[in-house]
Image (cartoon, rainbow, N blue to C red; front, side, top):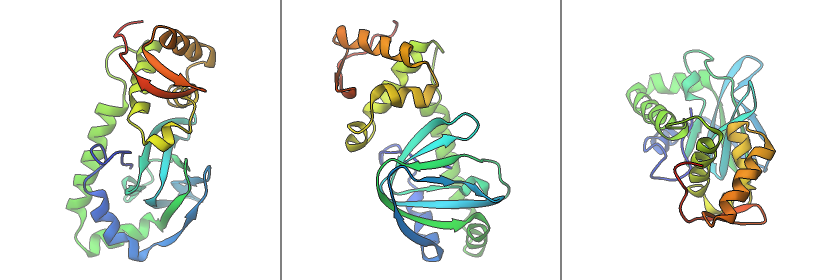
Length: 209
Protein backbone atom coordinates (compact mmCIF):
# COMPACT_ATOMS: atom_id res chain seq x y z
CA UNK A 1 0.00 0.00 0.00
CA UNK A 2 2.78 2.41 0.71
CA UNK A 3 6.49 2.83 0.51
CA UNK A 4 8.88 4.56 2.82
CA UNK A 5 10.67 7.86 2.97
CA UNK A 6 14.30 6.91 2.44
CA UNK A 7 15.60 4.75 -0.36
CA UNK A 8 17.05 2.22 2.10
CA UNK A 9 13.59 1.80 3.64
CA UNK A 10 11.43 2.14 0.53
CA UNK A 11 10.38 -0.66 -1.75
CA UNK A 12 13.00 -1.44 -4.41
CA UNK A 13 10.13 -2.52 -6.67
CA UNK A 14 8.15 0.76 -6.56
CA UNK A 15 9.96 2.49 -9.42
CA UNK A 16 9.61 -0.50 -11.75
CA UNK A 17 5.87 -0.64 -11.08
CA UNK A 18 5.62 3.10 -11.66
CA UNK A 19 7.43 2.77 -15.01
CA UNK A 20 4.77 0.34 -16.23
CA UNK A 21 1.77 2.27 -14.90
CA UNK A 22 2.76 5.90 -15.45
CA UNK A 23 1.97 6.06 -19.20
CA UNK A 24 -1.67 5.27 -18.36
CA UNK A 25 -2.03 7.84 -15.56
CA UNK A 26 -3.33 11.36 -15.33
CA UNK A 27 -0.54 13.44 -13.80
CA UNK A 28 -0.86 16.77 -12.02
CA UNK A 29 0.75 18.98 -9.43
CA UNK A 30 -0.37 18.49 -5.82
CA UNK A 31 -0.37 21.21 -3.19
CA UNK A 32 0.66 20.86 0.43
CA UNK A 33 -2.17 19.62 2.65
CA UNK A 34 -4.19 18.13 -0.22
CA UNK A 35 -6.07 14.95 0.68
CA UNK A 36 -6.19 11.93 -1.62
CA UNK A 37 -8.65 9.14 -0.83
CA UNK A 38 -7.89 5.52 -1.72
CA UNK A 39 -11.60 5.05 -2.40
CA UNK A 40 -13.72 7.59 -4.26
CA UNK A 41 -17.44 6.81 -4.63
CA UNK A 42 -16.69 3.13 -4.04
CA UNK A 43 -13.97 3.04 -6.71
CA UNK A 44 -10.44 2.14 -5.67
CA UNK A 45 -7.76 4.65 -6.63
CA UNK A 46 -4.00 4.35 -7.08
CA UNK A 47 -1.57 7.24 -6.66
CA UNK A 48 1.98 7.41 -7.97
CA UNK A 49 4.19 9.76 -5.97
CA UNK A 50 6.54 11.14 -8.63
CA UNK A 51 7.83 14.15 -6.70
CA UNK A 52 7.40 15.19 -3.08
CA UNK A 53 6.48 13.65 0.28
CA UNK A 54 3.15 12.26 1.38
CA UNK A 55 1.67 10.95 4.64
CA UNK A 56 -0.69 7.99 5.01
CA UNK A 57 -3.60 8.29 7.46
CA UNK A 58 -5.99 5.67 8.81
CA UNK A 59 -9.50 6.91 8.08
CA UNK A 60 -11.17 5.42 11.17
CA UNK A 61 -9.26 7.60 13.65
CA UNK A 62 -7.11 9.92 11.47
CA UNK A 63 -3.94 8.34 12.83
CA UNK A 64 -0.85 8.88 10.65
CA UNK A 65 0.65 5.50 9.75
CA UNK A 66 3.70 6.48 7.74
CA UNK A 67 5.24 8.93 5.33
CA UNK A 68 6.67 8.31 1.89
CA UNK A 69 8.90 10.19 -0.49
CA UNK A 70 9.06 9.64 -4.24
CA UNK A 71 9.17 7.18 -5.84
CA UNK A 72 6.24 5.50 -4.14
CA UNK A 73 2.95 3.92 -5.14
CA UNK A 74 -0.27 3.69 -3.11
CA UNK A 75 -3.49 1.73 -3.56
CA UNK A 76 -2.11 -1.42 -5.21
CA UNK A 77 -3.24 -3.53 -2.25
CA UNK A 78 -6.82 -2.80 -3.37
CA UNK A 79 -6.62 -4.34 -6.84
CA UNK A 80 -8.81 -7.36 -6.11
CA UNK A 81 -11.07 -5.70 -3.52
CA UNK A 82 -11.32 -2.49 -1.51
CA UNK A 83 -9.47 -3.75 1.55
CA UNK A 84 -8.10 -0.37 2.63
CA UNK A 85 -10.04 2.86 2.89
CA UNK A 86 -7.20 5.05 4.14
CA UNK A 87 -6.26 8.45 2.76
CA UNK A 88 -3.11 10.32 1.86
CA UNK A 89 -2.13 13.91 2.53
CA UNK A 90 0.60 15.86 0.81
CA UNK A 91 3.13 17.19 3.30
CA UNK A 92 5.01 19.00 0.55
CA UNK A 93 4.10 20.17 -2.96
CA UNK A 94 4.71 17.47 -5.54
CA UNK A 95 3.78 15.66 -8.71
CA UNK A 96 1.36 12.73 -8.62
CA UNK A 97 -0.08 10.22 -11.05
CA UNK A 98 -3.72 9.18 -10.64
CA UNK A 99 -5.35 6.00 -11.97
CA UNK A 100 -8.12 3.62 -10.92
CA UNK A 101 -7.29 0.25 -9.36
CA UNK A 102 -9.40 -1.37 -12.08
CA UNK A 103 -7.11 0.03 -14.76
CA UNK A 104 -3.98 -0.93 -12.78
CA UNK A 105 -5.26 -4.51 -12.47
CA UNK A 106 -5.68 -4.63 -16.27
CA UNK A 107 -2.10 -3.41 -16.78
CA UNK A 108 -0.71 -5.88 -14.21
CA UNK A 109 -2.53 -8.76 -15.93
CA UNK A 110 -1.67 -7.71 -19.50
CA UNK A 111 2.03 -7.29 -18.69
CA UNK A 112 2.23 -10.33 -16.36
CA UNK A 113 3.39 -8.22 -13.43
CA UNK A 114 1.67 -10.08 -10.57
CA UNK A 115 5.04 -11.48 -9.43
CA UNK A 116 6.55 -7.99 -9.29
CA UNK A 117 3.51 -6.68 -7.44
CA UNK A 118 3.69 -9.55 -4.92
CA UNK A 119 7.36 -8.81 -4.17
CA UNK A 120 6.51 -5.14 -3.69
CA UNK A 121 3.65 -5.90 -1.31
CA UNK A 122 5.69 -8.41 0.70
CA UNK A 123 8.44 -5.82 1.13
CA UNK A 124 5.96 -3.13 2.18
CA UNK A 125 4.13 -5.25 4.73
CA UNK A 126 7.37 -6.59 6.16
CA UNK A 127 8.35 -2.97 6.76
CA UNK A 128 4.92 -2.21 8.21
CA UNK A 129 5.36 -4.98 10.77
CA UNK A 130 8.98 -4.32 11.72
CA UNK A 131 9.40 -0.57 11.34
CA UNK A 132 6.03 1.08 11.82
CA UNK A 133 4.47 -1.07 14.52
CA UNK A 134 6.08 -0.23 17.89
CA UNK A 135 8.43 -2.91 19.16
CA UNK A 136 8.56 -3.87 22.81
CA UNK A 137 6.42 -2.16 25.44
CA UNK A 138 3.35 -0.09 24.79
CA UNK A 139 3.93 2.62 27.40
CA UNK A 140 3.54 6.23 26.34
CA UNK A 141 7.29 6.72 26.55
CA UNK A 142 7.98 3.62 24.43
CA UNK A 143 5.69 5.00 21.72
CA UNK A 144 7.22 8.48 21.90
CA UNK A 145 10.76 7.06 21.80
CA UNK A 146 9.87 4.97 18.74
CA UNK A 147 8.37 7.95 16.91
CA UNK A 148 11.29 10.25 17.74
CA UNK A 149 13.59 7.74 16.06
CA UNK A 150 11.22 7.59 13.08
CA UNK A 151 11.09 11.38 12.89
CA UNK A 152 14.87 11.63 12.90
CA UNK A 153 14.93 9.29 9.88
CA UNK A 154 12.49 11.44 7.90
CA UNK A 155 13.59 13.64 5.04
CA UNK A 156 15.27 16.68 6.62
CA UNK A 157 13.07 19.25 4.90
CA UNK A 158 9.96 17.51 6.26
CA UNK A 159 11.46 17.00 9.73
CA UNK A 160 12.28 20.70 10.01
CA UNK A 161 8.78 21.71 8.91
CA UNK A 162 6.78 19.68 11.44
CA UNK A 163 6.59 20.06 15.22
CA UNK A 164 7.87 16.93 16.96
CA UNK A 165 4.89 16.97 19.32
CA UNK A 166 2.43 17.08 16.41
CA UNK A 167 4.21 14.30 14.51
CA UNK A 168 4.13 12.05 17.58
CA UNK A 169 0.48 12.76 18.37
CA UNK A 170 -0.59 12.13 14.77
CA UNK A 171 1.09 8.72 14.88
CA UNK A 172 0.12 7.65 18.41
CA UNK A 173 -3.04 9.61 19.35
CA UNK A 174 -1.46 10.33 22.76
CA UNK A 175 -2.52 13.47 24.64
CA UNK A 176 -0.73 16.72 23.88
CA UNK A 177 0.10 17.35 27.53
CA UNK A 178 1.64 13.91 27.98
CA UNK A 179 3.77 14.18 24.86
CA UNK A 180 4.91 17.71 25.72
CA UNK A 181 5.89 16.68 29.25
CA UNK A 182 8.06 13.80 28.09
CA UNK A 183 9.65 15.86 25.31
CA UNK A 184 10.44 18.64 27.81
CA UNK A 185 12.07 16.12 30.16
CA UNK A 186 14.13 14.63 27.32
CA UNK A 187 15.24 18.09 26.22
CA UNK A 188 16.15 19.14 29.78
CA UNK A 189 18.13 15.93 30.23
CA UNK A 190 20.10 16.61 27.05
CA UNK A 191 18.76 13.50 25.33
CA UNK A 192 17.30 15.45 22.40
CA UNK A 193 17.84 18.87 20.83
CA UNK A 194 14.72 20.80 19.86
CA UNK A 195 14.40 24.27 18.34
CA UNK A 196 11.00 25.95 18.11
CA UNK A 197 9.37 22.56 18.53
CA UNK A 198 11.33 20.95 15.68
CA UNK A 199 13.54 17.95 16.38
CA UNK A 200 17.14 18.83 15.48
CA UNK A 201 19.14 15.96 16.96
CA UNK A 202 18.88 12.84 19.10
CA UNK A 203 21.88 12.45 21.38
CA UNK A 204 20.86 9.26 23.20
CA UNK A 205 17.39 8.16 24.17
CA UNK A 206 17.12 6.20 27.43
CA UNK A 207 15.53 2.77 27.10
CA UNK A 208 13.15 3.58 29.97
CA UNK A 209 11.55 6.75 31.24
